[in-house]
Image (cartoon, rainbow, N blue to C red; front, side, top):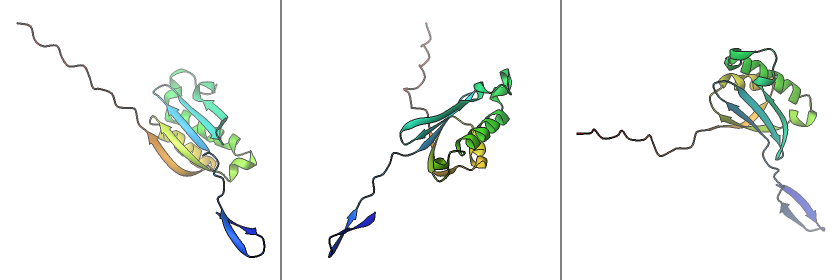
Length: 132
């Protein structure tokens, strides 16, 4: 909050407008890893391991592919000056810790890291009863 002057005698508190959170979303599966950067509610940058010509075929699922992709993504993103001082919310969908390490090594600062779990479902189908 900031103080603003009203006339000569009093001060009042003016609430600072909160912008939408800037966030980085990591979607990972068995075969690939995707990273997207959302800045002030709009998609600013996006990349995927599939776009990389360095890792063909089965090598895309390796941790080193996710790490180098995230490291290059972070370096490209931090070339923009307004992103350097920003604190981001990191949302993880899937388990790819190498991509998180690549983002941290590139210089991103995070306000919070949130792991998004899969939604629950109604369980597996029960076995059929035995016929007599």
